[in-house]
Amino acid sequence: MLYPEISSPFYRVSMKWIIRNEEGKVLLCKESDWRWDLPGWWLDWDEKPKEWLKREMMEEMWLIVTSIDKTPIAFATVKRPPHGKRKHDVYIANVCYQLSVESLDFVPSDECVEIWFFDLDDLSWMSLFENVKPVFEQLFSS
Image (cartoon, rainbow, N blue to C red; front, side, top):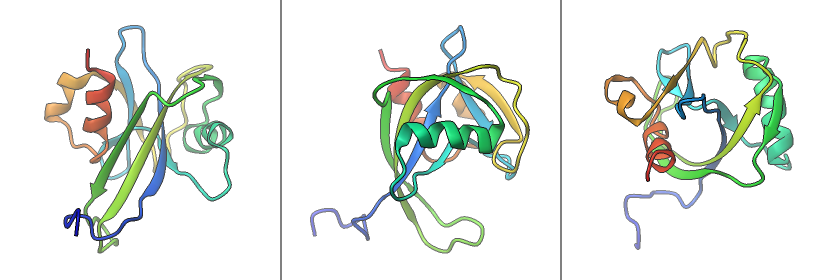
């Protein structure tokens, strides 16, 4: 077997959005389990990524998207180990688009109880989802 650590050839596609502040830091959401993640969710069958980004931003945070880059700004694959009720690993392909929003006056939900801007150096002390660090390494590489 070419890649014995991968038990399945299938990846779940997760669309993530990147919002930067004036200092270049990236917005993360604290979820209800107190781990920080890039905002976004699974891309469902037959959804168009840019339409999905606008809809999902409204559903998760009640924010209005004003612009979306034409192409993804980062891409990372990760393995998410079992957590909570899920008893198996999930392999995820994260496709990240940079976008702008009308304002950051979000409405908290289970998927986002708090937002804050961070850079790569901030991640060392945080409880993170597995995809955050590889995406940040791409975004903050020189």
